[in-house]
Image 1 (tube, rainbow, N blue to C red):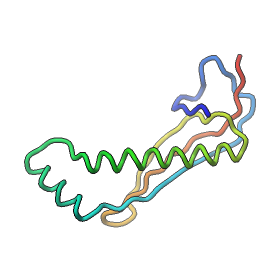
Image 2: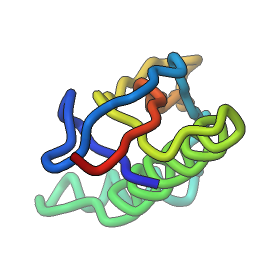
Image 3: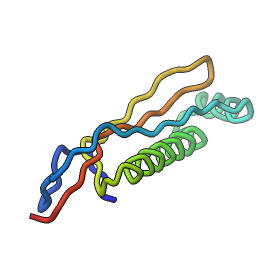
Length: 106
């Protein structure tokens, strides 16, 4: 599966557009990690616990997007975008979306 943020794929042409596909996950912060993050905030630097959580959320969202695209028969997804939304205090959604397509070599 080819997954790109661009509207086209060099060397390939879109022969069929299958439609919007998406994948999302909702994650909540962990109290223990919040304490560590608060301490890190006092001294500065990267908050690795949150970096890891966001990276895992991004990968899970992309995996779900690819599953949906494969179910439609796509071999590529173009115009991938990410968005986030707060669901409640301490929890957020990460959504990946794009257009499922069938591409062929030019």
